[in-house]
Image (tube, rainbow, N blue to C red; front, side, top):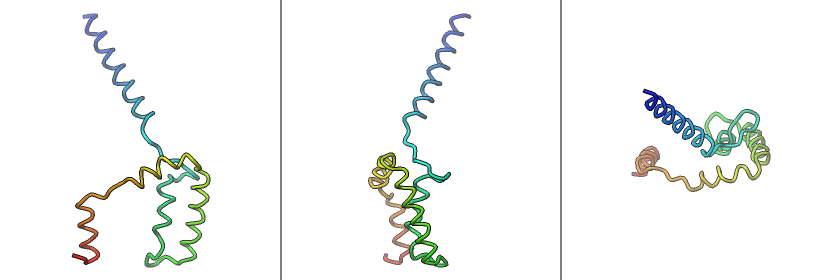
Length: 102
């Protein structure tokens, strides 16, 4: 009976160590004023959207500039990961269909 308790305890400890390690090693985005870096970078995509004034876009982009400066070198791993990201074939086809280029 005592052997089963030790085995169960070992399994729980290994699982707990795995979860803690996974949480510690995963890539986190820097946060500035309660918003993640990816959210700030979305301001650069706003240019030319219908219903959004150009001065509003510029104000958001200036705030995004400040957020990126605040993140500093902590933003580099996130930005590099974003640069390496590839769209799936399904997403590419959907975008082409939406644009009417097929």
